[in-house]
Image (tube, rainbow, N blue to C red):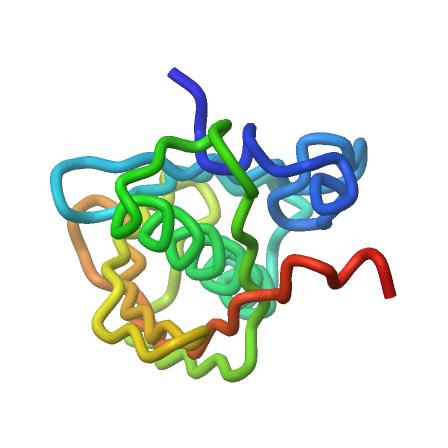
Length: 154
């Protein structure tokens, strides 16, 4: 099954966090699971911020990219469109807030779960929780803004 990010046009598929075309990137993959979007990520030893724990900037990056992908997927879903049909709708981050609740172990699989809490015009508010072994380790909230269709033509 293809992830949300697999449908990104090449111009957007170079993102460090989620771009399939960025050979040095994280290559995040997000999918629908019922009414939530879910992303799983296995940190590597070089993602450390200290002894046995993940660097906080990585947690923020995962939250950022998964949230923007969720906003895009939700927009398509609300319009009754599947990815790969019609104009692709992409979002960027206007605001990101992350609360770190517990250390994230470097050897644990990260599971991010997200929902779009609000949509107003081009703005979507996305709430996320990051888990490791079913323990909530971080909560994120982002405001994502839909990129105008002619953005790359400017």
